[in-house]
Amino acid sequence: MTEMLRRLLARPAGVAALVLVMPPTLAALFAGRIAPGNPKAPAYPTFRPPSGEFLMGTDNQGRAMFALVVHGLATSLVTVVVVLAISVVIGVAVGALSGYRGGLVDSLLMRIVDMVQAVPAFFLAIVAVAVLGSGQDKLILLLGLTSWTFLARIVRAQVLSAKQREFVLAARSLGSSGSRTVFRHLLPNVLPSVVVILPLLASRVVLIEAGLAFLGLGDPNRLSLGYLIANAQPHLQYYWWMSVFPGAMLTCLVLGFNLLGDAFNDLLQRRPAPPLTAGRARARNHVAVSGDSVEVSAALD
Image 1 (cartoon, rainbow, N blue to C red):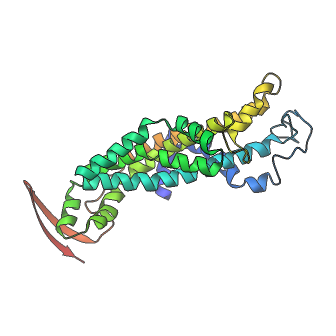
Image 2 (cartoon, helix red, strand yellow):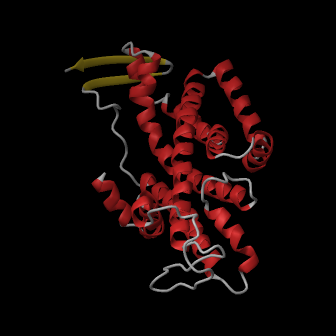
Image 3 (cartoon, helix red, strand yellow):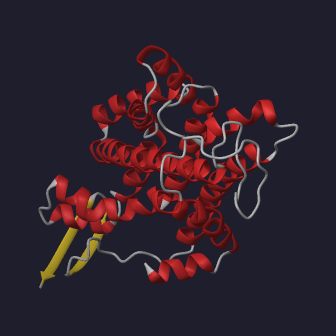
């Protein structure tokens, strides 16, 4: 982890990404400490500009913009983390199963992926909120169930390529089961591609969540950057800080996540070639490949 962070910081895109993403992330993690109390409760004079007393000013209801922005960041990042977790579980499972099994299973799963991708996630979210009502739990579930498709395609492509490599053929010739081959040998070689996709997926989730909140379709019980930007629209001419600060935080997250994805992509493309064996199995294999036949002699510790 330390070596990867050092290599990431050696790249301008990696440094810029961390500079943009880390402050909002830390503010969201410690939102309850740096902005305690109920941020939605009016407690100050209205329309106060940024000052030493009010770092980001106050809004039209007498609420501190700093507390509103910090708690809005917390809502966005909680949504991102849970949606990514759901997407990784579904996307990796579907992609690995499709790529490894092939045939009818592959065709069926890919048609399901095509159907899910055919409907834009933002449009589907609007319809779902209109039918089922608003709520962060519903939004997270919806985004999680519609954001895994691109991840599944990437994993499938990587598995299709990796399962033809010598160490996988050797493991199967030695009697390794299908599940063991996937988890021990294939997935460790697929995960770097997943790491590249996750920041890009995170920026997409942030934008969808903020867009729904901007349209008034977010969870009314939770603060959101999109809600704060929408609330500032009638006052843009005179009270600029009401939209600038939440908009700046939203821009930092989206731009930072995209730069982080680019940095990871550059980092992993230049990584040294992986060892012949995966899963850190201590085996010494001699593999001779001739046509469609594979001869393996192995001495296991």
